[in-house]
Amino acid sequence: MQADDQLLAPIKQFLHVETPQAWVDKAKLVENQSALLVDHMICELKAAQTAMLLVRRYAVDKQSGDALMAWLTPYNDFVYRKQGDWKTLARNSLSKKIVVKENTAYGQNLIDKMVLLIKEELHHFYQVVEIMQARDITFDFVGSSRYARELLKHVTTHEPDTLIDKLICSAYIEARSCERFAKIAPHLDPVLNKFYLSLLRSEARHYQDYLSLAEQIAGKDISERIQFFGKLEGELISSYDDDFKFHSGCPI
View 1 (cartoon, helix red, strand yellow):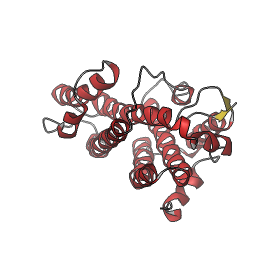
View 2: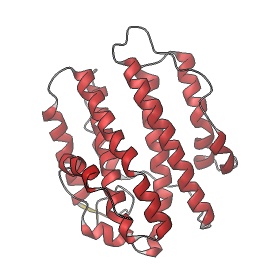
View 3: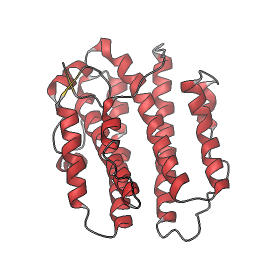
View 4: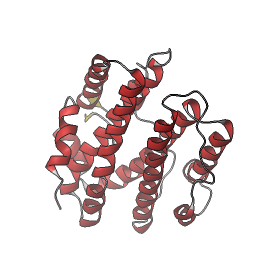
């Protein structure tokens, strides 16, 4: 199976640089695919956590926030506490209707987009775990990569610019994920090839959702800020990195 070039075209235009061939060469090695799957699992959970935190902080009442937290708890327990049966995660769902906070102009749009994103990221998380279980892949604690950490270091500290910057950063993370799935899929076995290509459409929509939310909330031209984070993201992807992860830079 091959990636959809039409789907990828806007993502390639949005990103400032392509993934270095050196990263692809390392990622396609059979001996590195277990580490990549473990990090992919963590990335899916972190993506859901990020979206959940944005909704809890900016868009919902306390009861709704608590329900969102309860939704993610079994996944956090499985990864960080090694508790629970992974098979039960397939039946885990949001327990109540999410209520928008009063006097929040963008609240409902943020909820609609982020709750759908969380559902999809948690489904992808389960799919990765399913593949890992089939391949007898175990995992220990996985530290964070410099990638997201360095991007978020540059987030403005006053609202609403803080939220806008976080949304832009998330747009780049989702776009890079999509680009990397497409880059490595042709080099992988049929199961992983099919799986990674199946993720492209949702990842492409996620980056667009984050970007459109940032533009809506800003209510002004934010192209300069988008370019700022795009340049930074490109530098992190292109520069040498001694830690091999899904969003790591060029292998040393």
